[in-house]
Length: 117
Image 1 (tube, rainbow, N blue to C red):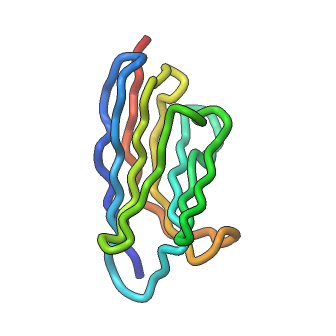
Image 2 (image 1 turned 60 degrees about the vertical axis):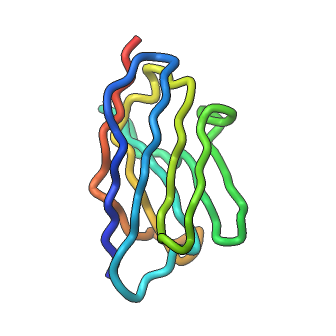
């Protein structure tokens, strides 16, 4: 079973930056796919960025060029550097790890990001 501990959320003005961190711990789990999702009030949870063990990364169109996902395989950690933040980036951000892309994966508790205009 895996436990995911997220940190780094907070309050920032538009144009600012935040860095989210997520560390996985436990036993018998795979971090082949590490992802960040977000859920804004009244909206469905959406995939923000994915980092695969082979180095491939994907991003939602809404964050391309502003967000960067990275991972530290030795630490079983994934990070999300968020730059040029916009009010529409306000959401609870969730870390997710999975053995493969089509797997539901395991979830963290979420960390709030609030961007003021």
